[in-house]
Every structure is written in C-alpha cells, then in structure tokens.
Image: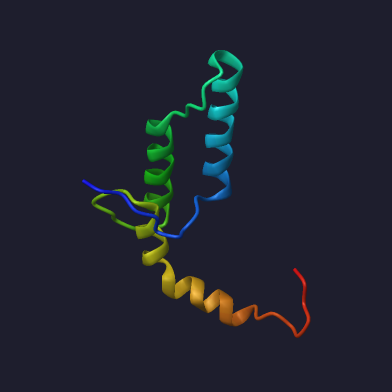
Length: 85
C-alpha cells in the first residue's frame, strides 16, 4: 500500500486532537508521537456524520463526497475586490 498527499487538510477539531497527542508525547517521552488510531476514529466519525462512505476512511473521500456542497458555499460567499480575509 502506498500513501500520497491528497492536498486536503484535517478539520480543525482533528488537527487540535493530533496536536494535543503530540504535545502530551513530547512532555512524557520527548518524541513526536500521536494516537493515529484516535485520529482514524475521528475521521470515521466525521465521514459518518457527513453521510459519506469511504472504504479506506480517507479524509479526501469526505472532501470529495461534499465537493458539490462546498462549491455552492464558495459561489454564495465570493470575495469582494481587494478583500483580505
């Protein structure tokens, strides 16, 4: 099995949990470890709540499954000229 960068990022909630795991790991053992099983559980919970089925439980599949919805949001909230945020 090979992995690659999907160019999608984790949700803020999952990134926060991952950062907390790494922070705790650094305090306890000076290693950058995370609970990857817990991260996969969070992705599963996110995909389930979004109504997305993914055989590999990849975050990319959640983005792909919600692509049309996301594009509608982008159309509805277009940036104004010279907008900075």
